[in-house]
Length: 387
Image 1: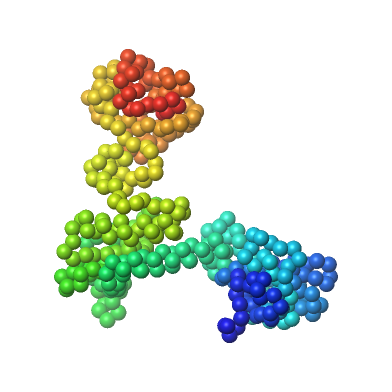
Image 2: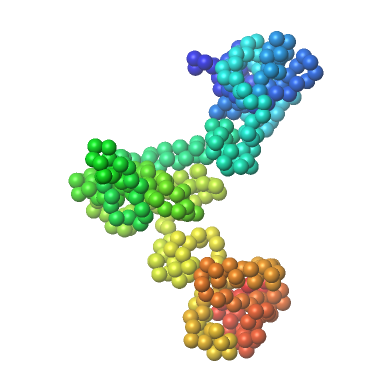
């Protein structure tokens, strides 16, 4: 039993019917039914509970409150006459005998609706971050991070790794980005640097005889935003092993990561050990990236020998690479835009042809390939409706 409440808003069930309970949370919504009855939704970190206000005095109090006012409610649990199977607490409701206002919301209108805060303007969300974080969907991201970090810690310690926290204020070291600098108060004109990674510290730990180290390490890098991490600050699982080969490191990662991704990942699945090994050169040649997403079937094939001598001028004496797009049904306008986008990113001219629904090569440079249609189809493994 907690001092300010006996239960949370996501805890009550049919087993508590008839009990007097105390809840605390934010008033999410009020729905008046006539002049003598109101339904109030009370929300806290754990969920929501419906209150049924039948007392005239309490009804007058509730009607004068704005949404998101903080309340402490004492009342009796009873079974709902109309249950809501979509809610964990949908079988019960609480009839208040006492309502205490812990914190009054002074604004008649909130900057955005709590449960739809992700649709609001980003500036407003950041300004009223404490309201944004009341959205269960936003809150769940923080809960997920907590669970993943806890699972990583548990798994690493089961593999005999020791968690060691390395310094934050340190000297500058050569890394891939600019440092964030902190003035040293007692040494005018001198600065600390925030670590871009704990690289030097973990190497010192290895030479000191610590066999296996890890930490959920904060990294500070003064760089532009990237698709896979936030600018400025991010956290990473940092680890180091003494007397270990590359395969030893792979073995630990293959054991640690899959169960966590299977449990907490979006698709509840993960790659099984051993992970596929791809050399840097092979990755760049086949996928055009050193960190390819293997769920995407777009691969690069060398077609230089296949298309040499086809009579198409721009191919003569050049390296020619082909990318197949299966089940393509785009228009000519969409193809032209796709080619333009690729040219902007790669700096190279793009040419195209497609295999139509009849299996014929058509469009783009198709006329230069008619004399070697069978060879092109077989070598590139072309299928119908492929670009």
